[in-house]
Image (cartoon, rainbow, N blue to C red; front, side, top):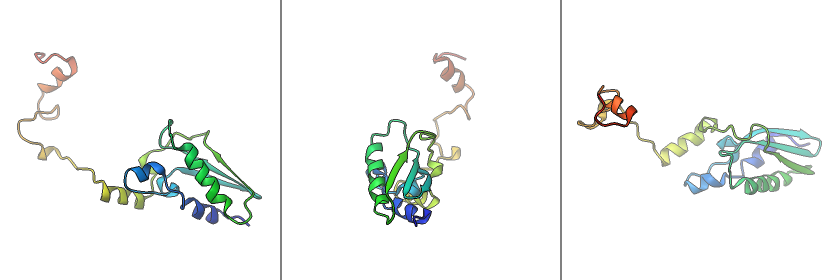
Length: 141
């Protein structure tokens, strides 16, 4: 019998191609690309969401999914649903462990207002900067 656990484990063997390009390979499950798994007898449907509506890797991803899931004993057919809700991905959907790996290898600087160099006014600290920035006229009051 085909189980959700077997399918999930097979999906963990498929790595998001774009994550490879960033230097932090992350599997589809941890990346948050898998929305759901439906099993109906020998048919397995994988519901996906991509990180972009113009994902150039969509065909490669679905092909790799089909290969990985077809390798499970008892699976006769695999389909990938990329239609409904396929473009709703956000980085918050990544597994915390994947987010931590990404941040360790590609840290994001934490900027605090107190650490800004002197002489660089901002709208938060200098009221005269905001009107000029809004109007586009550097002479604006």
